[in-house]
Every structure is written in structure tokens, then in C-alpha cells.
Length: 120
Image (tube, rainbow, N blue to C red):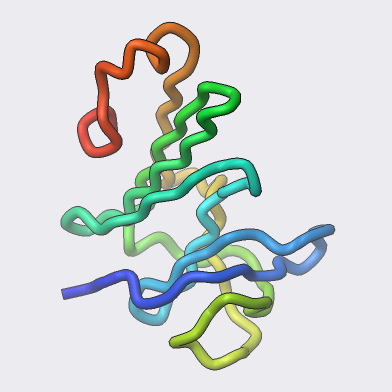
């Protein structure tokens, strides 16, 4: 069974700064997390589920990555990965067409009538 084995930052070729990513098996997934967001990641069947929560701006974003999504970006492991040897890697983009995304904000966010595992 697959599991999230490591997390840290990757530097994607052509980007101006590193971005958060997780490793599932031999595949690296860029999560799309910004500095002001809290993150929770888990696996559900054949999906990587990512919950990005910015409580200050009252925005919550859920993303589902099919584990069989092909990596489309080149980059290198930057920092934070403790279980993965530093290397150049191929990365699944958080903006990939296969990634399903939902966002909660405003009154719906304030009411809190959802949780990270049910609104996806």
C-alpha cells in the first residue's frame, strides 16, 4: 500500500522560489501550498488528498491528485526532505489537468459546516 513517505520543498526549473511537495512512492507531488497556509495530506484509495487552509484569509482549498498522474515538471529537491536522497526529480504539478480542486471561502468557511475529508 502506498503512503506519504516524505515532504519538503522542491525547486521547479524556471520558478523564482521553492515550493512544498510530498513524496508518495517514487513520485514527487507539488502541493501548491503557500507560506501562509496550513496543510494536511493523506491518501484515499488511489488519490493524494491535500487540504490547504488559510485561516487569516478564510480560504480553504482541497486538491485530489490521482496517484497515476504523470510528472510534467523538472526540478530538484531543495530542503526539508529527510527520507529522500537529494536529486534532480520529475514533479507532478498542482495545476495538472488531472488534479481536482474545490475551494471554500466567505460565509461557508465561517460557518465551518464542512471538514477536510468530506468537502472533497
